Structure formats: structure tokens, C-alpha cells
Amino acid sequence: MIGSKNQTQSGGDGSTNVQAQNVYISGLTASEARQIAIDVYKENIEKLSIEAAQVAIARAERLTEAFIEKLSENHTSLPDELKSPGMQLSILNAQRESARSGEKSTEELLVSLLVERTNERQRTLRQIAFEEAITVVSKLTDKQVDMLTVNLCVSDNYFAASSIPALKQFLSTLVKFRVITNFRSPDISHLEFTGCAKLTKDNHTKPLELALNNTYPGLFQNYFSEDEFSKKVPEHHLYKELLTPNPSDAGLFTLNAISTIEINRFFAQKGYGNDNKKYLFEFQKSNSMDLEGIRSKILGLELSSDFLFELRNRQIFSLELNPVGVAIARANFYRKVGYHINWPFYMQGD
Image (cartoon, rainbow, N blue to C red; front, side):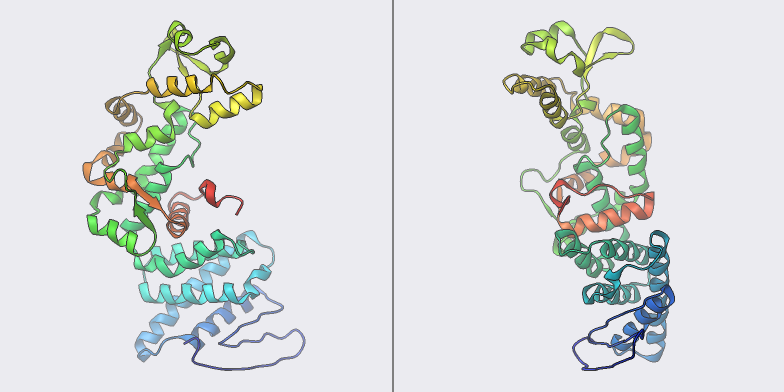
């Protein structure tokens, strides 16, 4: 165990020094890094029976092999970050958690988290989140991890769904996390207990329709005439670029601004003052579909997304993810979908 030994070791130039308390690596190759990681684990493994120790070491070796292989895919040479004590402790923690769990899904999440942690060289909120997530993920069920992922996808504009086809693709992606249909209230409390998320105070049963409309209001607009627009928005002729005609009726339109962010960006690009901006915000809000209309539109695009509308799933969309929960959700999204989604704005450029 770490803290129970005090070892020193020296070596000549170009040698590799392994020490259970603090490990420093120089002249790394993939095979050396793999072997050192396993040696460190064996030095620090908890006292187990011979049979249990053999299983634990086999699991640690499997995780280490997968991590080095994944890391080597994007690096011609292994990064210097592997030499840092913090990174090596993260690897050791991942080995322990993989040995404890034995689940393939947990191993895959840990590998993804380790690779992400390797890319965070500075002491940032993201680096800390990855390190903590490594110690937490084995304490969660697959269902709970999927709950975090669905929340992350719905609650923030990660997909930049600027069109109906993009929204359809987004909904098809959410179907990959259908396992959340069996969640229970203890799953929510456990996510809070592990520091992954917390329930917002204002609404504990937020429906998916409302969550999506808050994120992508421009995709759920009723059609309107130019006359209606002109009556509610002063100097409406300045904003015609924000109107998209109805393919079936050229006399009807929708706003093509997906959210208030696009309206703000449009005003900034045009150099317009902010006096009329509030009228566009109000028009977009007042012209939104009702919840039933939003639900019908979503189901029309992806019928299999019906599970997201179940009453018992509404608490998922009222969760507010902590950085650790975000790190786990992103790793799980990558594991199931194959690419990374963006960080929340408060963790970007950290």
C-alpha cells in the first residue's frame, strides 16, 4: 500500500528506476511503460489471498495493456506526462478500481479517463475531475453512468443541433443509452452521494420536452407570417436573415436562430444596438410550441426516443452534473458513440 514503504533505488544513465513510494521513468518505450505500471501495481497491491491476488493482477495487466495501446494510437512516442507522480498515481488508482470491479465496461471507462488525464498537463479543473472520476467510476452501475451521459447530452448545447437533421441524429444517439429506463430514486441519491451530480432545487421532475426546448428553442417554433413578425419586432426588416421560410408555404416562416446565443452573435456581427434584441428574445419565446407539440415533433423524428418521456425519467433532466460527473459522462459517450463531445462552458479553456 502507498505510505507503508520507504524504498530507494538508483541506476545508471538511461536506466529505469521503479520505487513504490515515488516512481520516476526515463527513456520510456511502450513495453517499458507497461512493465513499470504493472510493477508499481504489484508493489502496492493490497494483501489478498493468492487466488484473489492473481485475479487482481490479471485485471490490472489487462487495463494497462489497453491503456498503453490506446495512448499509442495518438502518440508516436509516449508523453512525458507519464513520468509525473500524479499521472502514475492515477494509473495505480485505475488499476485498483479495475481489479475491484472486473467489469469490462468499467475497464473501458477507466482507459478513456486515463487517456484524457494524460492530455491534461496543467493543474486544471479538468485534470482534477479526471483524477477523481477514476476513483469514483467503479462505484457506479452502467445504468447510473448512462443517466449522467443522457443528462449531459440534453442539458447543454453539446451537439450544436442547428437543423432538424442534426436533431434527428442527436435523438438517435440518445437511444444508445436506453438502459436508463430502469432507474430508481436510489440511483439519483447515489449519484449525489458519489459527488457526480445534484438535483436542482427549482424542479425535480423536468420533462425532456422542456429541457430540449430550453437548449434548442429555435428548433421548436410555430410558423408565423411576416405580418405577425413586423407587428411584434420593431425594425423587423433588419432581421430578415433570421427568417427561414416554410418549405410547404412560402408565406410562413420560423426563426433560424437556435437560441439566444445566435441572436446575440447576429447583433454583434451586424453592429446593431441592443434596443431591439429583447423583442426578438420575447418573440422566440412566445412562438415556441407547447410541450405536446414538442413531444410529437421529437417522436416523429425518432420513435425509439419514447422512453425519454416516461414520467419516472424526468428527474434525470433536473440533475446538475459536477465536474466529476461530466468527466465520467464524456468518457461513457466516447465509449458508446466513438467521439468526444464538448466540455461545458465553465470547463472550456480551463
